[in-house]
Length: 306
Image 1 (cartoon, helix red, strand yellow):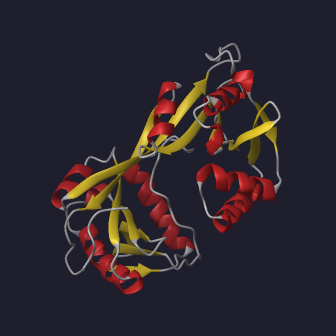
Image 2 (tube, rainbow, N blue to C red):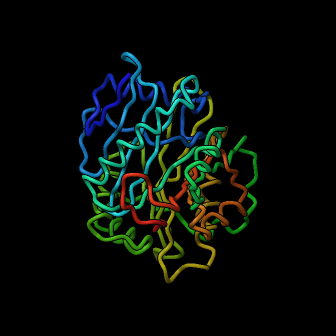
């Protein structure tokens, strides 16, 4: 038995982690309907991320990921094979990860990501005196047939105009989401490079009031088509005028038969979360975030979460 810290994972290690993840979340079908923990990429090293693996012989039985994008908050996620839980393996990884995070990032706030469907989550959080902070929810709306009516008569109040203008989309994204321009440029560049994703301006008359992105996911062997809403943003001066609702119903009306629209939203984004609930989207899975309410052993960590 042994544990190791990695800043880059091999293809073999990633394959074992992916298999372990599927067992832990009881993944029955592909696609975004099950919100799991974000898995790393092979042979990629990032300054803000590292991984800890626990092995029994040559098999990975426990995995931990530490992601610290801002140098202040370290997001901890991971999982242990059901047959090897309650043996201290993940606690061992956590202790090593705390030391590594202290060395790399200094004094940081630790935030834990936990699948709400995991029966061991409550015990884990209680033992470490963690406090619930927020949840990231995967929500979905299904269109069973083309005859299914969209229950919003004025969805034609807005139009969706496809666009691939990087400069325009970057500017709109920055205004709609309040992001720095350099981050917006990187984000929009990545979206435009994805052949399965399309970007749209939301038009009310001749005015651009917002933007949205749709990713069309096709899975071999499945009859149902999945459309993922990458983002829906309305410019500040046009908010609370029903444009987000109208844009979403317009998307609903365009969905092909036997398809579903999925999206991810944080419960901390109260306005968006309530809008999606009112429009009939159902929570299919959720990822809970817990903050630390006491100093972890071996660290001089701050408490709370931003």
